[in-house]
Length: 86
Image (cartoon, rainbow, N blue to C red; front, side, top):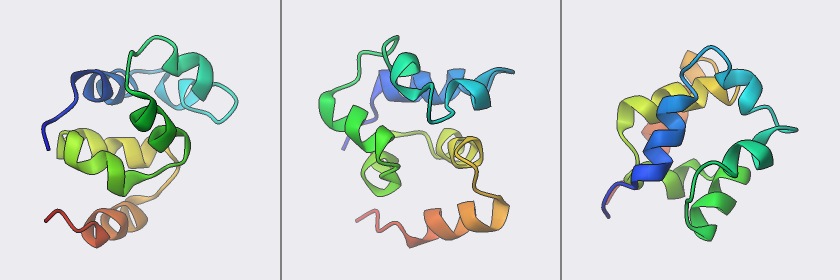
């Protein structure tokens, strides 16, 4: 599966100083309005479906995204390690 530009752009932009606030549950819908991702990607983002999103993302951006989502280093590594990329 190819990477998705708008998904990666969102993850990149969330690295900024307002990223954690922008991705807080009450702000996610509004934040997503600026990114024309597919309805499937949008739903995966809202559902925290990292396994669906991972093949379409830059791994470094996904790692940071997990931190933005509130996972600590140990949990982030655990999530990424559990994803079957085949």
